[in-house]
Image (cartoon, rainbow, N blue to C red):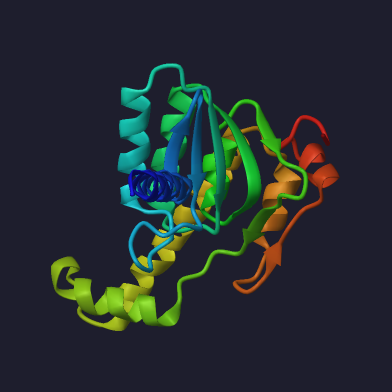
Length: 215
């Protein structure tokens, strides 16, 4: 009986340890040694996986509470630009290296570009697309904000949206130039349509000064 009990306890302990390991592996952002791993494809609630303010606050807390962090390893399908740029500033301030260990797309790009040096794992891709604002999102934004912002009609909102888009494009250009990306590469990105995704080759990324070497 004692032998059976010990076996049961052993199985139970194995299950607990296995469960803890599985949980750790499923963390969206975690620290391992001198490296922060950010898997943006793991949702931080039941559905939401886009880069957002939760990620910004988590990254900030990890950097503040873990000395000796040197590297950020990231993969993400993108998300909101503002928290992504704020995360990029943290990475730059802390002097981290960045590695895209799998696909890094859209709003993941400014985070990756903040690193020095930057490396791209074999088989990983950087994905760029044209700027766009989905129609339903634009309509809902107008409805929610028209009173507070004093938009009497959709034309006034359209004027504001045009100016906001112009400033957003300027921010992208300035940021890319600041990170040493070639003007030709940045201009090519600006010409992409809303449904166009571009995954440059490793040689193209080296020529654009996004990567230092092809390996």
